[in-house]
Length: 385
Image (cartoon, rainbow, N blue to C red; front, side, top):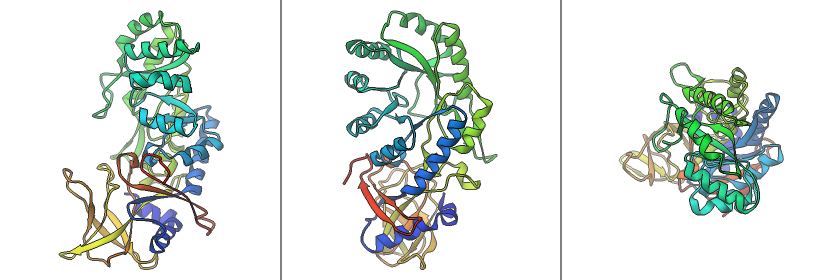
């Protein structure tokens, strides 16, 4: 999906990954990250957001909830993490990172609400009045007021399977009335997902109906007496999307994820500020019936994998087509259309979600300066190896 763009814009990452693999410094089934380029992308997005007074929460599920990158992002000025689920919250808490937003896309379980609120979280998203009560009780125990975002949903919104949740606009008045008895929460924000999305037909990022639902919800809640401080508009956040957000001045926060690594779908067909800063490294395991097979483990079914570069050195790399495993099979291997030598490096670059894989993450600094150094190897869930 991103292989041609990676070859064009960041060949040094490819060269470094192949060299280190052939020197037995990096195992197959590893996502290799160009840390310096990743942070350059992050700085560009942050600068654009600051110009528009939009607060950024970094999303790192896709890059394995990596605590090293999280700390580096906070150093350059990112407010904190948006944790996509409660297990990601645990990773951030374990590493003493700031949590800016929790509960969206996955609610905080009842047994963890007290711990999260006590740890500190700028905004907690809720989908139900019952969860709002739990957050209120947790805040009451420590004598604080917890700011809450209300996830809203419209009849025509795009909602991904497995993410069905939210309050309909006609339920907001009842929610506000019932919440008046809750003295330790403040209904201070609204959110939905996805608010922006890449359109395959036009090759452009477009605002979704979800965003209009959020903007309507803000007006409704304000009219009901709520002071809405956070209009959160996640998905596809990058420099280009932030430019589009100028049309919607009510937006106050966004959540770059794939934008940080230059791997939103928009980055395929456009010359963007962000440059791809990650690849997937594998190795030829065996050959059968004139097909080479490389080690798997990092497959994401929405990854749009098409090709790989295969060879024993950067100079010898040649492109080959990838044969994906069936959807009902485990990705022990990927097939290739042609035979290759056992032990050859294989470079792929596709849309990834490392936290749903069993891959490792190798962070390398100094790639662009010609002094590459591995700064850490992590598992797919943020644990250092």
